[in-house]
Image (cartoon, rainbow, N blue to C red; front, side, top):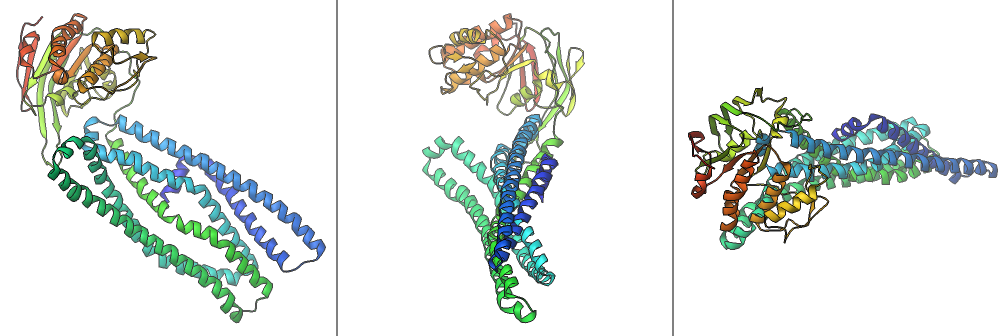
Length: 543
């Protein structure tokens, strides 16, 4: 039912047209069975001629309505999947960063890939499933026309079949739901393989324990739940076929003893039941995929509701302020929840003022809250208490998107785009080439139409490319989170003594998270964090 509702939400009009043409196709198919049965039981030459023309007409109707129904449902299903993918992507990007971090990448990736693909696979078979269902209903109409009594007997067999299969289907669905939960954990382990491959290769014992206890254990549970669920579905399919043959045997050997029935009518029943075997088998065989899609839709809807509850107001931001006087944080706090911990790390209350053309170093030990403060400053984390003011404007849900546009940032865990997206400038390539030369990358990276020739570089060089993007964004405030950590001593010196002062002289405010105490004297101010609190904020008289 979730899958039908999903399609109806996409376009109920197209669903209605597809269902109507599908039923017409099924009814016409049943009409063909009736004509075949009549012709097979013997008719005059003139009757055969009229039956032949009727047969030809119904074949054309079946062909046209079947194509229309399938095309409509194919277009509808693919549109629905496209909308689903885009809606999830929009919801993820519109949700609060702290909430996304709590959900974790494995769950987000499993939903975007496996769940959406499960729905896509199921939606793909929906057109053919609807045609099969329409054929079954059309044949039932024909059976009703032949005899109400036989229809009642058939309905009784269907009720017995559905009742006996329901328990198997429910149990199979529960096992597939458990398998889907295992899949989230499995994706987490796959992430460990890709991210920790060097550490796993260097330590044999660690690698074997990870493979045997972590990965193998979860993979075995995933396999077992899938096997149990699909076995129950296979049993249901076999049981359904047994009931179908039982119905044919009942018509052949028992029904003639209960009621008076002509051989012609009996042959019509047998022909109809034989014709029903293929569509019924298709319907029963596709039930596991439909139920798996329903489980996936439940996971998608659950994630969607979770994201919607933490969604930020999406607006098209006006241009950022190139000229500003003061950025002030008043009693700002944020709680960062770590996995498997009931209580979180509390940053703040933070009272801080930043000014234009200022070089500020943010320092402190590991875990002191520097990166969390960086996300608060840039508007990626939303303060739980306190206020952020940019000049005379209080930052809130309505203008937070606009506020973020004031920052060009390179985080310690950064993502490097292969294209210079969102940078509309006719001289973009020329400016980028000049910066590549300044960053000593012009011999390794070329740029054409805003596309980088390669990003397959060392971590330090990739950070220079991220710095290139920040330069081209030309925002009033720059923030660098441990940017120099991966640079060689020569370029580290260039960064602190040339690049940062140059940004400052261009009127930029520069915030630098750093452990390089030998360069602290270059700063105008040092802000030191300790256990989530500002220990001191002092001027250094930098250049």
